[in-house]
Length: 333
Length: 100
Image (cartoon, each protein chain N blue to C red):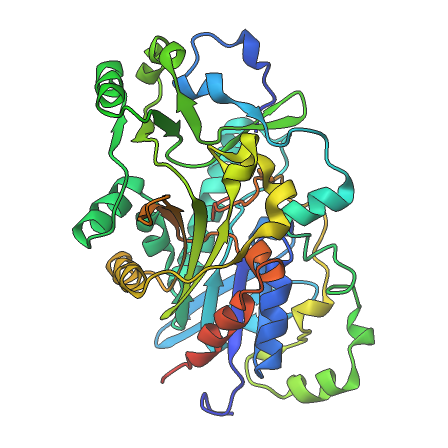
């Protein structure tokens, strides 16, 4: 069978606890005549076997588990959705041995993904680079997107100076989302307002910097998802809920079915597409604020941002667009 | 991921004072599923486990001769859920990497 006649073969890199987004895209791939294989990276190396054999002019790389054996040369596209390395390497293992085993596992998985010839949504190195908030803000500003006045610092005086310059107040957020488990419960850090009390307690910055931004007045919060050359935006009126005013995620459940499609101005869409090209991305989910006077203020872009609720509740056809983009790329085309 | 008692930690990074429960109240299983987007590995309408002997005939016939693909089953019919990794459960979780 030639590449031209072979159905598009999509490798989805994720983990066993990912959500329904994977199933939506797999169904959409199947509807379009493709075949999707799910690689749960947390199951490697304990439950999935990867063999890379190089000999003279020959190369054979295969992935096998209890459900399939796949010659990776047939993969036409990769969806780099999520990755969870080493989760099933026993926690009871000596910590140094486990750390080394995880690092070797990560090198193997990332090397396997990097060496695949097909289309990558998106290349891991592009995703990693694009996750840098400083880079995002720099390019966004260069492209004419409005961004909040921002400092990223470990210097308390710099934060206090920003606060003095922003009569509407300032907020802080982490550079990357994370969770800390306390007695079995997950604790997170959302976007928070910085008041007079917080300005007196900035000493902890010496152990960890943070992002500080002017507080931008909100009419709506927007989530813009870009897939290839298509831009989809949905909005939420987070100001109707006191707990959600600074960060809508605090009331994500209560607000989840209130997202609705939103028409982002074409000039902003065009700038977002140029931002994507500068970052080397074909997929991204960006956060904006629509101000009461109609300005669209760019906050950040997530190279692998979640989308399920925008499809389910706002009706944006994102899984189909992702599948179509993956399917459209043929090996050797 | 370690399991810490936050009030016992000193010194602490700046962000520690902003740590909060992810949700204002305990969520039911259905509510958690709603904010997480479900789990493709648990959604019985999307995924169920079958053994090779149960593969549909069209699949065995159609894919067996395809170069490079041996013993294949569409993944929508396959459940990989066993000892799944802990995730942040953030809603939405925008991270690519799940910390180990």
